[in-house]
Image (cartoon, rainbow, N blue to C red; front, side, top):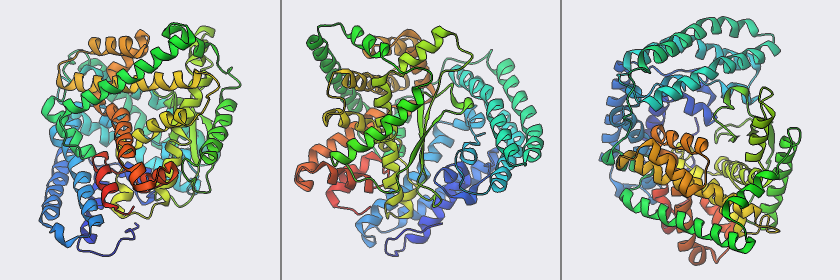
Length: 545
């Protein structure tokens, strides 16, 4: 594993030990970063194993705490903080939020073969062997789930676990098709014979025994929510301050939308209706997305918004069948350690052939031209794909190559949407900005719902009404967003990260970069994906990437 390029210090050996220990618990995370020595590994989630993992993490944290900060260069003091969070974050999941004891998604969501199917990083036989190893471990993984999960389980967690589990047969069938093309189908077929009965039994157990007695209780509570902000993002500010910032951003976006409505002499709902009525067809959806990839790339280059590390190749594909229930569009970026390719995969979910004409029309309306362009900005240029190209290129230490802040990752992509409008993308009409504001309202409501659901006793129904009233969403998508907040409070990350980046831009763009946006963005992206609580420190100290 690369050890980074920073000068050798007393923390070097500890850095490697912390990262190696993290990957024992989260081998799939290592694979997503491009470290394929971890291919095919499934963690031991038995109570005894995770207790031993936590005890070792405690010892490593003690070693970090005993290090003399004065003996470290400023950059390495930052790295020491990242290493702390890399341990404290999973410890929070194990001990404080008790994910393995209350959330069955921790088990069914671990059966992912995507890294081995999406990229040709190695010969097919190596990838098939990894798939077979994972499938062979599925019975053990799910047995630990049945052993550990303590009823009554939160009902939203059970319901989504059943939905995810229901998509696994299609996922395994996709793996079978991949293996068949390489004449290795028998290897996966034998592994499926082991995995699929175990999956079916686990889902039946959830459906028949756990769902009937599931509880509506899911909230973290104020103290644990505050702790979550720290272990994920290094944020010590009270969550009430974050709520106020989210409310202010919501008000700003609503005011701008009302201003556009006055200029257009049309109600807000009519503005959205105009967008929805102007959409691609079933056959032109993916070609349109490819056109937008090239358009947004030229937009970034023409306005010098950021450098584009080469080679920069992003292909557009249909979302795999098993992932379509949970995704409209997504980016599968190259990992920072993946030496084989820098190619990105932009997945767009097509119309399901089984849908009625009415359902197909509704889906295409949601992927109207303006919205699809805004999604492309978020996922590709200057959003996630560009971000990960810089992440790969950065010469950061091991800690910075491994640390991935959700609020930095999603915050940058959400910031990119606003940046594109500021810089004039689609300025011919208001359509592009209306689409951007619609997504911004969604992210504002997510932040407010996350805080309300987990600290204030907000119900799912109240959160649903929030998305309907403040975000202009129909009942069904509003309810889905509310339910997502019960098990994913971190969907506050979009607005939280965007506001942190805007704050850093306001503070440092003029004083440190002479107003040069491209230079500011290159510097920001060179940091890697740090916790957003460190942004001001990184800029103010001039810490290297």
